[in-house]
Image (tube, rainbow, N blue to C red; front, side, top):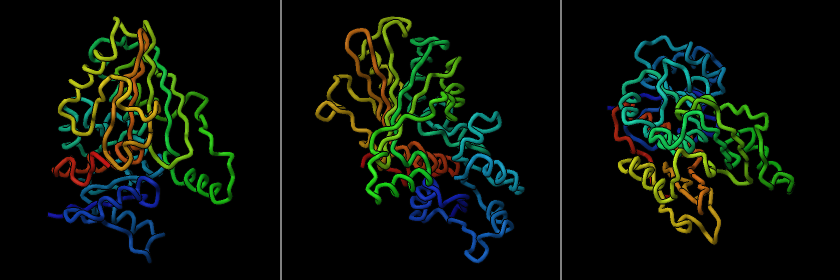
Length: 320
């Protein structure tokens, strides 16, 4: 049986990633607007209503408009934008979030793909809240680094254009969203169990993809003294049956290369690496992932597989 899938917005970074993955699969038929009708709104609406699943890779407003165009009652939607991530009638598409999340995704008519930063943040932090190690009112800081593909096609073109011109101004890592109101914060709060938004400071690096999400746990933040080994064991137990989540040994060196942590090590995979570092009373919780893999396109494929009743990991890699 072939499943009809329409990617609305396949020219963007996430859309291209998803299209490349699905084009190789015999059980998927990709619907596309005919070139001669590419600017015809009716042709787009036809594809939106003819698909078994529509994948939206659009800006938020355009994603909402696309949903409004869907009239066929059996069409299911997987939205990769931020538009519906905390909407009450949409299921959050992070399969590893809770024991019942897979079933909810598989049965849903509307699924919202999670953001890249929240994916690492939630998988790292939520088990601590569930275990009672963190108070919901805890003041959490999050420092993160992403490759420039996380900014979408416009930022990719900007970086690559300056590379061709030999401009070095963008080579250094650059913090952004310094108004402390990043668009991923609502989902980070809602699905973490926290009662308030973390102080989130993201940064873009001069490389294409790969992400680190770092959560400092200073002395006194946890409800009781906890060692790096104990925290690592908690995470390892929580994700023991999760193929896409790997927890590193807390020896402080196994994840490092000459003392450095490589943000690109998960690239090309649908894997999240969770690591705990620390010495004495202070701990650092780190998640590493491919921001276009498990952080975007890979997560969409995983959710699509669940929605269509296919092998969850079909078309996905767990090692590069």
